[in-house]
Amino acid sequence: MERNKQRLDQFVDWLEDNGAEMSRIVVRETEHGNGVYARDEISEGTQYAQIPMRLVVSARVCREALRTDTQRVELTGRPLLCAFLIQQRLVAGESSFWHPYISILPREFHTPLFFTSQELDLLRGTPMEHAVEDRRQLLREEHAATLQGVSDAVIPRSELTFENYVWAAAVVSSRAFTESLVSGTAGSDGETSVLLPLLDMMNHRPLTRVSWITNDATIGFQAGAVIGAQCEVVNNYGAKSNEELLLGYGFCIPGNPLSCYHIKLNYSRDPQEADKRMILERAHIASCDHYIRADGLPRDLLPMLRVMVMTETDVYYVKQAIVSGKEPKLDQLGLRIELRARFLLAFLLRKKLDALPQIECVPSTENGRQAVLYREDIESILRSTLSDLDKAECRLLACASKLIADDLHSLPRYVCDNGQQLDAIDEQSSTNVGDQLVAESSDEQQSRSKKSRAAPPAQQFIDDVLVTEESFALDTDFLAAVEQVDIDTDVLLVLFILRIRMCSALPWHTAVRRLESFQHPMLVYDDPDTAEAYGEMMMEMGEIHDSLFPLLTEHFPDVFPPEHFTPELFLWAAGITESFRLEVPARCMDAANGCDVEGLLLL
Image (tube, rainbow, N blue to C red; front, side, top):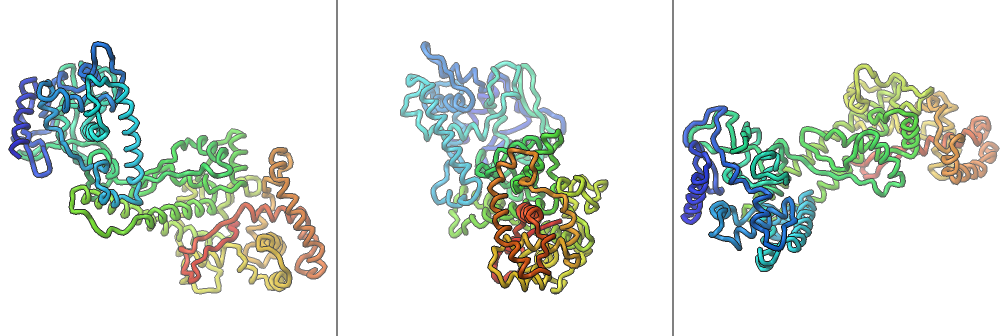
């Protein structure tokens, strides 16, 4: 304590001797480290801390300290600042002009790069786990470049170690400011970061109102609100999540409203990766990185997920629209895409939540405490987001039951007759199909289910809306016929679509008839590339049809009349089963067997 107080006094004397203005503040040591406090009340608009430009540690200052008569320093950015800090602390020492400043810099930090293995275990399963490794690897690359860029005569290799480089990098990440603050003034040569003695001692408090005051001679702070006498004088580092704060500064803020969960989507192995990337680019979505906050999803996350869950048919028709000069409308792809996108997001986030191991033993250290704060923050965001997704899924599923009861739909425009969407969505009252569908009241649904109206929305959706193998029970003649033959389930669904088309009593009849003009890409004969790509599929479906007919018609003429089961109609129905699939996760239902349910969503 006494040694630190002596260093602080020397630092303050150095500041004042070199023209710093700090008469309204005092620098002192606290239980949490050094801090800055108001001597008396500081009124709004008052300047309270200024340093002259000669005390700015700029790139020019660093190069001057590191150069030799025969070697010019080519380092830039963080490596340049790190080399300067190491040289000043371990080589120049007390003889340096900057020694009073260097001596008060922390020797230990609470960023994850300084965690023990036990403390790092607390970060397993979080985005921070990979961020720490990425940062460590980046610093290794920078350290190697610094070894090449600084003469051994300036910094002996015994001092320019990776451990010392990590220390210097922690100083830079927690204390450096962007060069633009002093851009165009003395001491700046356009580099990205600078160190500002005294001004870098103010701790962070979100939403603090503070202004930078800069001129050719000085740089400093101006109060944006009254600061009480003896109160801590703080800065606002900007809108930073706990992940940024922990990685860069070594602390978290309990209940930080800016906290977020970083998720990186990856569709690089998707066979249609190139086409989906093109669609996303046309929709002005370039990044796969998304940051989920407790108060909602980021703007581009659902649109990107909608593209990721597109079928080949969806991709084909959206591409056709883009080629014809239209912008992709990723919020008008219908209920099936909205559900698939949310199902995928919930699946990904549940995996992330399940990957968080139980905390069995928390180290009684500051690092351990900060890691637990971060963990709790991450878990809270995941749970609240999953809860919101569950509610949205339930509303979408309930909306589907209402749509089929009212003979309405939410199909994308390229599916409907004449390329138009029907009355399911009132476009004048909503700019986002997905959001409007989510807002539909589940209380208005008109269930056709024979089961209890108290069943979960997912179960009602499966009973009322989704076309599955269980749906065959509503067509007793069809069920009796197919039970006597051995036919693959996918083919049975193709046959059942054709039965629905011919039987007006079945609940999906209107929905199927609405798809009369729909064409799977394999049926678009005016596109040679598409016809070639789907040639094998068409041949296979033709062989399946020939293996079934006229045999089925001969044995069950009333169930499979030939005029309703032609090769052309069979291919059309096969395209529907290929394009309109939806898998409802078991977690959505009170299912004892815990199995997902796959079927066709024709709305």
